[in-house]
Image 1 (tube, rainbow, N blue to C red):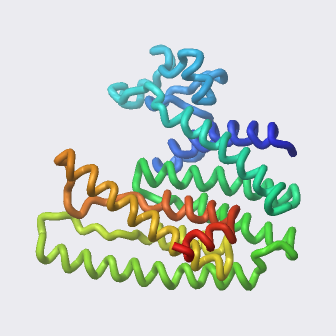
Image 2 (cartoon, rainbow, N blue to C red):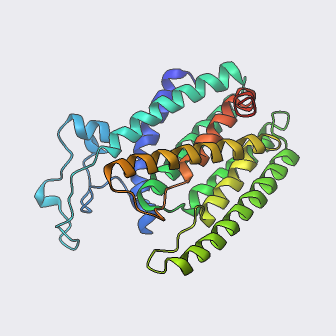
Length: 280
């Protein structure tokens, strides 16, 4: 596999991620790419980039599924080409780092590329629906064990993976329980506000999977980086919305993108991220 194949993999994976991001939150089985009104997209419009370039963002009226609510807008959003372009760039960078920096085998490199696609899928679904679906998490776990079996000499080892998962699970479970306690206290003082927590159970599961992927002691770096990124984003959100007058207390912010960004950085850059985080 070379850089061009990695880029092609990312482009195709972007199309698959877009289709899954439409179907998984709705509880549907994976289908071929469709417009938002349920009508099938032609082959030339399976990729969002092609649909935008060829003017196929909207389906012909004759293809609309009459059993669905036709008032729903069918125009493809910019999410579709953006996801494909992002994955094209990420898989290219991942392949380059895996071969030149980490000296991974072709099998490990392929697993890293699939992980990247799953990370983007989880981030998109959490951003759009504030949910973390189980199937992509299970796929990440399966790939982690396949990698460890296929390359037992390549870190992290099984023991390191299990220790990392346990450390992440316990730490973020405590944060989750603490957040629930604070939310219950806030609900007593502000009963009109929704009872939200900073972390959900899905975030705990995701961090546990992240700890499994990077192993111990890199899990410590992973958790620290996640908290730092989440704090910076929360502060930026409060500042931006306060200036615009749209800030609301107890607003929920998707946390999965910060976890996934941290997992990706630690997974590829390892020592550099450790020096950056603990050298601040």
